[in-house]
Length: 486
Image (cartoon, rainbow, N blue to C red):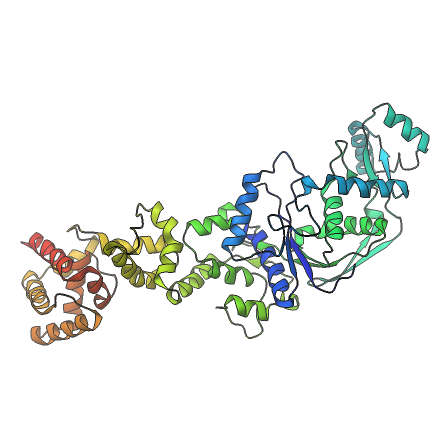
């Protein structure tokens, strides 16, 4: 198969949300297409009619677009090689099946499930690798026609050559060799007329002129069967690159017990898509300079299959949190707020209308709270300090207020000096003056003021907290807690 431009694809099965592993495969393909000026195709493999759904398809497409992985051709976009849903391509599969049957490369098999099970048991008992014996391989054509005319159920099998080796120069794993004698004549069309995965995917890649298949290594065992089909069709296969599995930190296959596994879960938890894309790119790949915080353009420029590791990638939640924190601090507060909206809603905080005083206060609070947050969930927790108008004091924070006379003196000095509209610089100057006039150390001034303002020993710096609260609310908080000391 030849074409001037690189053509890669992402072909999810719509049986659930977009998994992190699938998102990484989509990203690698997208980066290669954008880097080379090639085409990124998205098609839907929905031949599993019992599990596939349009709602899952919509969820997958939304997740891809949220990540910024737009496609040039495919479902919803169209293109000259469609349709782009397998369920809409049955005429194409039937046409190729007819060609294979006419050329003697495939045949109808009438063996029952019971016969095949018995054959498998005998082979296992003899220490052999189970595979179809070829019982129906050489049925006379008139016998095949008679059985079909009588309505006898059948599948269609491909004729796999014996004594042949199939070699793949995998862009990630190097040369991989498969022996045809371990494959056997496998089914390509089920008795209900539906093509099996390995058959449909070859027809799709061939007719859509895909010339590089980048996918997870769990698909490596499918490759020899697909090569048999390419050979039977007289078509050169595309290039292949099988990327490693993603494991949890305990080195077992990533699952729900390791945390969130779907892209949508990270959107709901308030992660920035650019941070998740950055993190996914580093799962099994690394740039030459060892950099970790990489923009989308840097990823496009630097990505290469040559630097994709063969070993499994480990999903490190702490690293993702660190990366997202870096992006939080580099991103405009309004975007951080928008990304965190689902997490804020889950925590019971709805966004006020844009342009209102309450919205502006929330934006100012986000600019402060994002400094210590790794995602929207933590941001929601960090914002509580700006909206908690109670007078309670948490845990051992009350010890800071034990010397009531000193605390009252510090608080009164602070309030007497605090201007009506304090900004960060004004608060810093006030704090310096309180330290000077009280003759106390910084800690003896700052700590009681923080507890009086927040009820906690730890929190945002006072020169960032007080401007968000404003003079009036700061005084209400301080006097409310001072009253409890009486």
